[in-house]
Image (cartoon, rainbow, N blue to C red):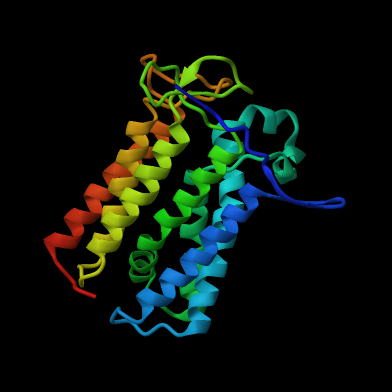
Amino acid sequence: MLTYPQIDPVAISLGPISVHWYGIMYIVAFGGAWMFATYRAARVADAWNSEQISDLIFYGALGAVIGGRIGSVFFYNFGRFLEEPLWLFRVWEGGMSFHGGFLGVLLALFLYTRHHNRDYWSTIDFIAPLVPFGLGAGRIGNFIGGELWGKPTDVAWGMVFPHVDQLVRHPSQLYEFALEGVVLFSIVWIFSSKPRPRFAVSGIFALGYGSFRFFIEFFREPDSHLGYLAFDWFTMGQLLSTPLIFVGFWFLFLAYRRPLIH
């Protein structure tokens, strides 16, 4: 049995200014995305210059942050939003959703490709291998913040989160870091290292993330105000991840039915 180390969520405090680890993880995520995009740009057929890469990461970051906040409010806290609409803008109270951020990025990249006159789906394929790195950084941020803990368990690596209760729980944040971050990054990055048909890289990412997230939800404690949506096991995270699994299969079907290598 392990005990959660009670990490101070504030990394740096200078007078009235506090820098939280979760914010640092966002910087790590977007910095890593810029680094991997620059590396990848030199190895794909489409020409990308440094300005286009910087704009791409900027648009993606805005989409992830704005969409993540809106998604968290509408998918997980819609009742509170109805009672207190201005809570949507109180971002300092926390609350981000991957699925909302994902939709935000898709919209932001649509605007980006129109501005830069680039093909939308080729751009999605280009950026897909970068996303798991940011997901992994975000899950480390969740762990440091002591949030999104797992269900009670008796496994040897179970962890007690004293700020929650004295039950031994799955450290589900670390499961997500391992699968959604490390494993998914390895799969999508290696797969994208060779020329692939349009939609293939995006399909692998969507299928991989949707499947991993659906699986990990069996070990993660559901949001207390939502509980299970059906069958005493089906969660909001699984509901939102299921379409990604189908989209992943559909994209792979499209990719290899009429391969268009790019």
